[in-house]
Image (cartoon, rainbow, N blue to C red; front, top):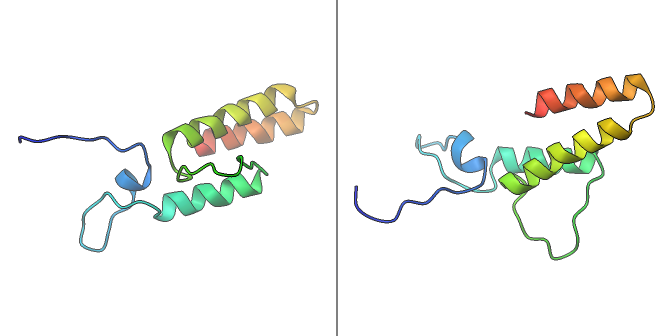
Length: 90
């Protein structure tokens, strides 16, 4: 098919189905869920940061943050909990 083809870096575009059966809308359930997760883990971005929470860069940053926290965890229980979160998130 002729024309420009774009790949959008937002989970909402691919995993949230609209009422009419199409995909591709931003700020849907995946973005809201990621916003909740970031708040739960007390991850705050600088003022003016304007990416939608389900942008692939933010999701990769969150995964890297979980890995970093796992490597710094002193208690085995904390390490296990963080590893479980990594598997669940991925």
